[in-house]
Length: 254
Ligand code: ATP
Ligand code: MG
Image 1: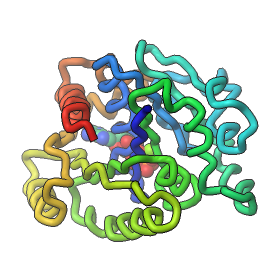
Image 2 (image 1 turned 90 degrees about the vertical axis):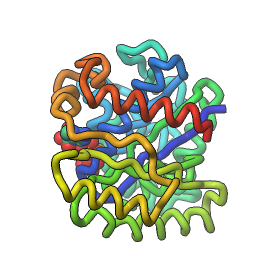
Image 3 (image 1 turned 120 degrees about the horizontal axis):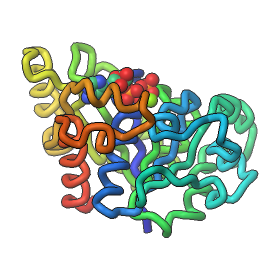
């Protein structure tokens, strides 16, 4: 049964989508059957993996509304073991349409249960909010991976996120756990990056991934080519880092 990991942080621009795309691709090249779920109306994960929005008919939106069976929405990518549940801006409407529905927090869980056995890993790229979409992701997931940019206010939003995780554990998903905090956009020449990294490790100890994602221009260029960094520039430090993260996740077997 596939392990479901929500990639979440309500703070914008911290590397959620970059991590979703590149960790998915790295798990897939390790021959793990992987599904990338785009749960963000910005649909950056879909475009970043090479899905052209004009060609998408069925999306995560229909899965959440229970209109279409999930396996019909699953789309191939340029990588053998990697599939995607794409999204478009339609997804903005889902939060409002679901607001008065019964079991609105469990829609994604229900949709993913239909296909869970077909995958080893299911990664969910969350939007930068703690609204109903992210709540659906945290309810469906086994664990949460939190990308954290190594900058001054990095810790601030973290307490709100851990409170939300506690709340979901109490009310909707008792076995949800914090898979780990991932330090992203780490700049080794910048003292602040080191200071923030050390502070986070002091607070969260072994819940911080050993792998650190460096700031790397190849990671920011790759999505405009619709490619994960592995296919864009395999020799880049960004590609190496996400391959190491996949290895760390596979090896810890959580
Ligand atoms: P949002 O909250 O809007 O969904 P996000 O958390 O998904 O944002 P990304 O889109 O992954 O964040 O990253 C924000 C920007 O930073 C993007 O332009 C991305 O290309 C760039 N970026 C992410 N990680 C790195 C990195 N390690 N090195 C260089 N650029 C990066
Ligand atoms: Mg994003």
